Image (tube, rainbow, N blue to C red):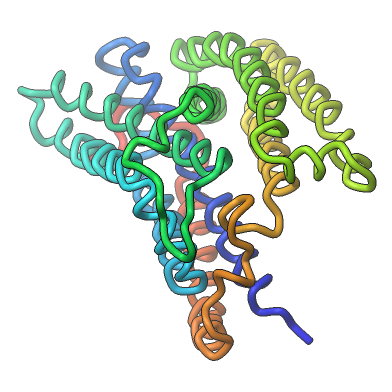
Length: 336
């Protein structure tokens, strides 16, 4: 018999992963934006994401909407626990989106819009990382409702995950520019990537070392038999991919494939997501509520699955088409 709850957990996990992959690099460009020289380089950096940035956020809507519809109990608990960082994330995305268009239409205030673009990207990224950390460290529940305080999400661990995601998105943005830009901007992006890659590997190590001690279940899943067979391979795989990414960044200067660093950094993110899955599966609220306890009725899941079966392929199709149409290197002119 098909377990619809697992299917819906997979759909939401896919949507979140797609959002991290696709919106991560354009948030990363916003984070790095002040480091680029005013003028041609900033325009080129922004034009590299102009055709795709707003479409990338479709996956965030799908993930949040899917959580509300397929796992209403989890949605009802998570939202009150994380109102502050989630509101900060949405406000950051709004400022960033407005700044994206207005910096071209209002050149007299371009410095302000550049600041808003960078600030919104940083706030949104920090809020996403803090939200992840707050979920991992556990949410106080009484019965079927959130029972913690307004500031429960703010801890050293959540700040660590926020900073780690900030580094990761910045590295994604730098590797994207290695692929899409040319000349001085590509050289600058390559230099940034060589600084950010060791920082990201260190951040992954710190978060990974901290996580098993947050919940007894995490420790069991990582270090007890048979889970240790899978978890023991993760540090080695991260180290190998990190080394390959370092070499790929260096080879770009000597005529290497300029797309390779970006996809290797994506692979690092993928390994981190697998590590996260090892820690929390099968819970939707780690250590508190499983996916089956939080799931909507079966009839509701079937009804929504029909819609998702149509919409998700359509979203994938137009996303692939957009990236294909706007493939290749960019310049400072863009479509504005």
